[in-house]
Length: 274
Length: 260
Image 1 (cartoon, rainbow over the protein chains, first blue to last red):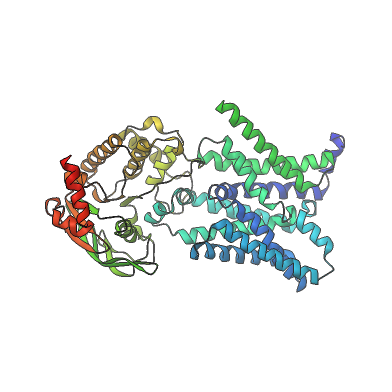
Image 2: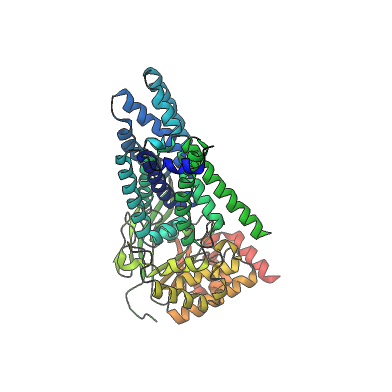
């Protein structure tokens, strides 16, 4: 453990400032979209996309393209493909996601085994490197936060009705498929962007854990949505700070901070219920 | 009450296929303003399919539907001109009990026009409309509760507030009181018909309760994948029509039950 002033001193370095800003931006975006992802029972989607994105990245490696650039169109393709399969087949969503992500993972491992020079990159992909966030990444994260806020904010009532009951929504003239695919594409872009910071193994936590903690603290939908975003940002900031203080890996520290908030919310609910 | 001569709803030669099976074949009927029309028929007769195909939840294979004079496309969502004039309560209004949605928030969704708008748009008018609707169904005390905390009877009352919170012409109810005990069902219908009288609603409802249909409805549509009969309850519920719709065993069972 470092002393507090040394840990705080780390935040004078640009790479730590970028990590903090990137974490907070991703935490806010993950919280906003995560609030709907969780109640629509799509939590597994972000995990599945994270794992599947490895295929996009490995194809980028093989064809000599920047993996970060390949992963965004791949994520959109994943969103469209999965939404189409959910809509057109009678297979359960979690089973479909399992098929898509395990197949993608299998293909990407084979592709990468043929390309023997990417071992360091693989470690970063699996566990992320939020300290390596670049100014361009912050710009993309900021744009995605703006886009997510506008999408959820301006269509909030529609999104809530869709979550409550799709038949009620259709009867009110809402185009369910269009809204569903727009949400999935946005979520895919956010998850794909966050992979470089958190890695394919932990990226799902940003979407799921703050929303679940917010659910336990909230007494209505509006507060749930706002709290989910706030907890996402707060846990990112806390995780980065504690990783600096205790000299721990940053991505996992953020997930531990999220877990702590979730356990706190669980404790509060148990206390109130008793 | 709306006294327009144009039918509120006009269905012509409606045919719907579910998978390989013909769920509805060439069904035609219309609804005059202010009337209460029941759709009856055995399980699997296509009653829910009929209302869902009118609303665009299920695709139509053939036939036309006109709602408040507007032709409805088979592919697109309800047109803006009519979508706020219709309220629909589905057969199984199952709510995920973990959804953090309060009664006030649910009823407010009935008031919203659901386009692109700021979350705080028209907040005062919305709040007032919700308060009035909840007060009318005597549920003001439930406003802060999660919808998952309501009893079956309370849920149905809140759904009526959802319909009531904005002025509407047509209510489409698919076995709305399903799952309620006898007392709660009677309370539901009493409130529904009080509100119908106040609001001038036209009602199209799927029902299995032939006694309720006889007592309240102006017309009856007997369905068994195709239109078996339609008319006022006295004629549509005559034994020969019920036999044609449900089969002879049903009429014998009903006769014996009433004799008990």
